[in-house]
Image (cartoon, rainbow, N blue to C red; front, side, top):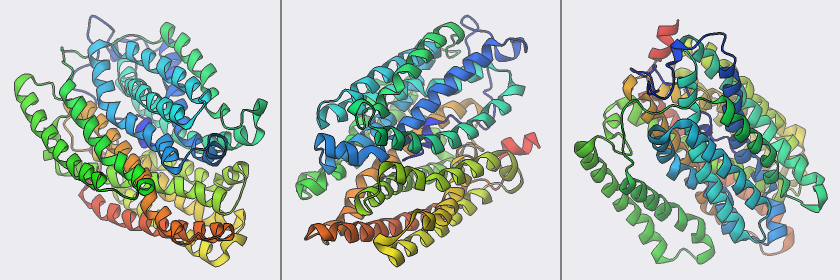
Length: 510
């Protein structure tokens, strides 16, 4: 189970200085008649697509043991089934948003949802781990074409006075995806529909994607950026290469015995990122169309917020995969029992996300996010103590309280974080900054999934000598990994001091 903040578009700190729709391609938002019901149908379509992407990310982890048994996938392949999606999503997310600006948001949304649906079918029909990994990479890339258009379509469709209500709905979508994804994955895996075992978790996207494609063609209006832009292909290649050089050795290192080339590759990724930064500066001076607007990093709160997004994404990448492996492989629980055990966590995320943006953040600002980090640390600390205290005899009900507390903490972070990071960003750069924030979160998620081989399987490998050692080893590995998660959360708490004490967006609304 993962809750990728990137998949849920966030409201910019301020509306764009000029309408994001070219006059020749669509009406400006405020010119649309309030009685035009087509915009609500368009909203339902794009929100369903965002929900589908969110559920697809959360639905997979609970089925991983079934995938391992059915396909014979190695742990490295399992990591790529999860991390590959996040990596492809991160690498293509900024590009997807820029393509929508150039060629039309509706067009890219339809291409993205078509490709996402086709990739889901390929995942469900995969005959070996290699095909599943490749299909997941394609699925992540297509999600990166689809998801960035959601925010732009809403800005092009709704007048300014309605956008607050519209974006408030996404808090509910986050919570609903958090609750339904793991449960749906557990039920579909447990039921073994038609003897397909884990495959329905992907095939369920087909009717939803087809409906979104057909209805989107009819009800979504087209829009483009108000000025001509160029695609930074060199920037796309450099950022993708740098990510691959960093994440690939992490995911394969354990299986290959941590070879020298892996360490050199990870070190070389820093050089590639340095070249990327230099090229983006050159690109910005030459034609004003860089892939990443580097001037945003001169804003203290934004630069620090990017670091917060990266570390928080790393936390989520480690926690959810290790949690699933602990319950199903260590404790020997069924997917359904594991999914039901996670309900208190999901309910906690949903409740906190629902009240944080609209009620708490306007009053307390960034302190809400810091309270979320401390609350999550407290919940995980109790969880680690219980795991050691009860060992393999632990029951689901004993996990309920610490999971609910940890979920409340995550909900206080995940919902308002993007708005807090964007608070000091100039309104003309809000869209670009939002895309960069989402990309950073997915990068952190992919890195966290890669680090599972170190923080979880490192302790496990040294403890397993007989089959009877597996359960206790997984409990020890879970505890070790959670201490790392809590340490990173503590670092995230300190980083949150650079965020604005109060969001300008909320100050203006109050």
